[in-house]
Image 1 (cartoon, helix red, strand yellow):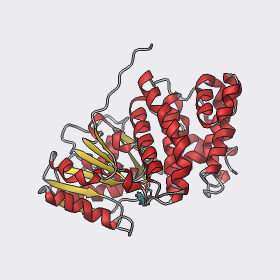
Image 2 (image 1 turned 90 degrees about the vertical axis):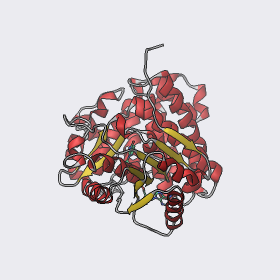
Image 3 (image 1 turned 90 degrees about the horizontal axis):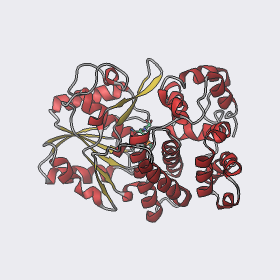
Length: 388
Ligand code: NAD
């Protein structure tokens, strides 16, 4: 077995109803909490009230920053950080999907460091220090795994660039994963976020930085996605399916935190950077079938193993034959969850695909794909992803 290490400092509190523990969890880290969320809307109003009451019951004073947007921008982070400073926050609570949890993490950095969170991206010489405020995360989607990662994804609209802070200090101190919070997620968002879980599990599984430990997490996440995502999409109130997906999301997050992602995420990040209206999971769904067709023969045993999780009939085939079928199998799965889409559906102009291919090489993730793509390969993948 190859040598490996695995690191995970986040306390995970998993289970229906556990959001009621948020006051106690936050109070362990501070007495003045900035709660970071999207703007109030009907599905979230009772949740926001419940969380604020739980915090108050533990003597935690709360300021509510409700300016989060999907694909959160650095301006939004700055507004949140300014509020955290004015309020004297000593702990940040991210309550919502990946956009809210990531904004909370970036606010935790910017509120106590000089300048914008953009100055602290993973590759820059300045990095977050021990001053970084503690973050507690409560996830309301089953998608990003952000509740258990050291990553905060942020977008700089001026540079049309989506990138990430990545530092061990950004692991949430405590994460609450309460599947009851996910029953209100609309079906289309369930599909897109659920496909992100597939992508995390798959990309950590095929990643050379993976390990026997992350493989274990990834394979179980893939099994749960194949079994439960279609039900969660069709029957949003099915708590069993929601619970499976919440667990799959957490497992896949634990896997990427230690193994990383590959080419699809490189393209997906570039896509939402250039076209911020594109949701992360949609960007991935668009390009996955073409990427699988491009790279199945670079890691046939692993592609075949994933194919067999989603289509038992592939058990009759040898690895190369089963691996080759993974593209069509994932395409069929995307149809089942109503997410078989192309770049045209996302209004991405064909004449800009070369620029998108170039931007896909900015983050280093593509280098960890079993078949390493150049700009022309990615351009070809994108051209094959225009229509569904
Ligand atoms: P999101 O947080 O943007 O939420 C999507 C939509 O769903 C929003 O409109 C939100 O208000 C709504 N929503 C969320 N929870 C809901 C609920 N319970 N009921 C009803 N509506 C609800 O989507 P996401 O996919 O969770 O997060 C995407 C962001 O996370 C992207 O920026 C992506 O790049 C990033 N990301 C981060 C990591 C990480 O490790 N930090 C990993 C992958 C992706």
